[in-house]
Length: 624
Image (cartoon, rainbow, N blue to C red; front, side):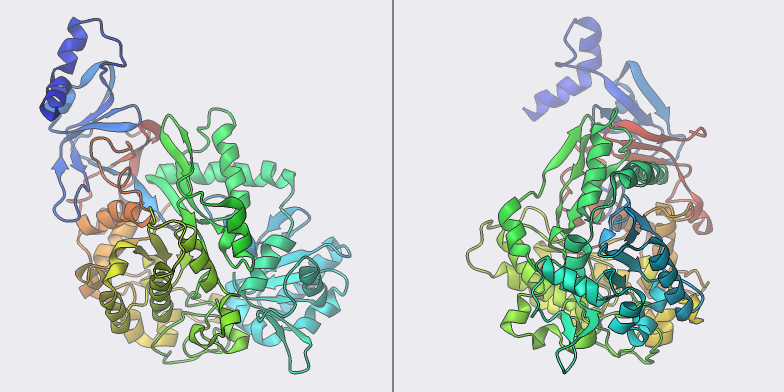
């Protein structure tokens, strides 16, 4: 049968010319690419480099030499001469949480039916004065208001503000000030509103002092409840005037960057925006695929109730002539660990060399799941009831119902180890409604790898088949600066140069068989093309001009795989995406040069000139 199929493919043009056959029986390719460097990414090592590709409908029809592929072209086939340029699989960005507005609405500033920028200022007092001004101008008694404080001020606010700060400003207006996605400061009116809407008054994420009075400090589950159950959806005008237009612009920019899939944790309003883009007009405003990890379990104190209502939706898709354009690839839960410039900080096994209280007042970071900032509890310290009041319990529930978790942010070494431990525990549960997952458990931002983490992975070999890791080079190599605090290179400032050198050890991950990929984020500027990430991986030259852990570089083939094939593996889509092979979706990118041969200093400058999503043009440069 295989031989007959091959013969039919080869003689198809001749038969089509000589016989009046319907196109359903035999038809030429829609597009052929030839005379190029086709980097197929069809294997984890020494992948095939071909000359040409044929595309028909939404799929790759054939890969091979230019002579062979050109035989599949008919009178109406578009022929594209690559002229020696690289043709790659479409790039997959796994940190695409904000690819559509409201992707992280849990902590967005919001009042008056619209979302707003972070609350900032040159000083913490200025930030508070700005908040007070907004409350006086926009607030109304009983109507909740939400403020996302700029990251650099979170630790100072954590130590400077409390419930009386906001009770004085807004005694009758419920106020929430987000220090990050897992910690917030609330006033009395907001706490009372949350309890009135069903949040348990005795939950350990609602902090009280020794006298039983509220302190205003809120842990992850309370933050999640306030951010979703108390927060109203933005107004219909916000969807029409902000969310949909911004989403169209961002997704078009992804296509211009050669990104054909954006994935990450995403909210319910995000799903509404995606549905509108898919159904309104010809659907082409949805320029690239978006594969969400749904946020419905994230910091949700009622996870079981939600699961009993919706069952399992993993793999449910919106599909058009390009193939699946929106596909649910898992559920999201909250992050264990913060970022290096956040108040919670990296949750690490190794302590910081230097604690900078105004940046992050801790030695090992705070566990966000356990509200360790004010409870002082790590995961191992929780009693049985407290365990059910964290996202640890939601991971267990998700697995029981057949949901994998994905888009879960972890950075520090202890967070990575806990992620593996929780997945292993979830897999050993009894009474599972789905015996085997069809997509893997996926964890993001994992940069702080130390021997204890590798040892845990190697001691639990079952993890190799069920867990995948994203690595953030933009954080692990390009250190952040907390400029309002006057602190540069925040990783080095806290963990020292030795700590920085252990971040994002790509070569070590590869050598240890850790299933990882390189994360791409939203295309916030026109510098960070996929080739920019490749350049960072193969040189490890940071934005500060130094080389971070040069022994951890990847070669160019590996860097390409880490943004395509291995990124598809992260979301369990290796059967349809991530490589150029017959039968897979025709998500393809032509770059304006040869990424394997261009001088290394010019690699980051190569840009796409054409992006194909499911065989259809998503972006085409005039220079093609």
